[in-house]
Length: 105
Image 1 (cartoon, rainbow, N blue to C red):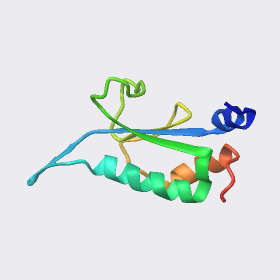
Image 2 (image 1 turned 180 degrees about the horizontal axis):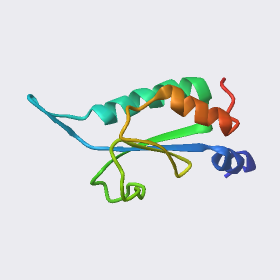
Image 3 (image 1 turned 90 degrees about the vertical axis):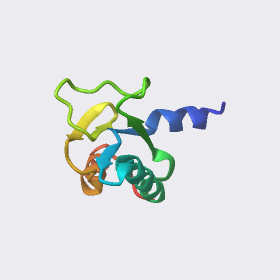
Image 4 (image 1 turned 60 degrees about the vertical axis):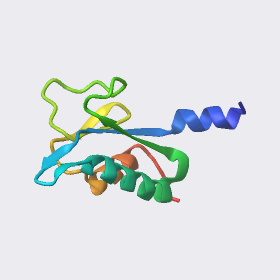
């Protein structure tokens, strides 16, 4: 591992989104996972390797710890809850990334 790799890993911002399947008349949908994957692509274009976006299902064993009063979806940036129970907001996420000093490519 090169020194640059270590520095890059340390400066990476972690975005973790926890959601679940959504029941509907046609069965179940995985909307939050799909939106997270779309978001991951958009943020990769804007910020490159400065961000890491992960989706977790509510029942995943390795999901991040959630607040007791959590409402899905829960969005964590660097382990800080920035949103829960609201839509996945790109403007909110971009605002937080800006306060963390991330620079758009």
